[in-house]
Image (cartoon, rainbow, N blue to C red):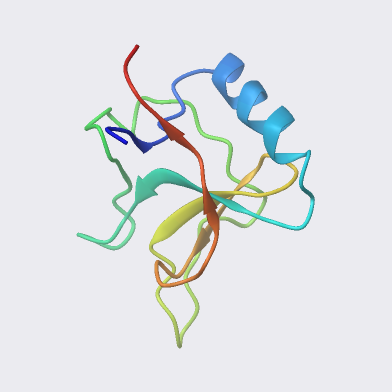
Length: 98
């Protein structure tokens, strides 16, 4: 489809994502953020600088458990971000250039 997982660049874009994920309270949605290459070093799929970008992590997030790496990010039904194992099954929020 020539699209990538969404990169959230602003509070307005976060609000848009949040409004749309709240419509389906049963699911979390993949966003284009991960720390698969180096634990704790989060990267956006399009190369946007994570350090200087806006962040909407839920309280206590991101974190990894002792038994499972949680290297990929989702937007929850509240819109807040959580890290999950990349092998988890979730819907995706994608975007593409106009």
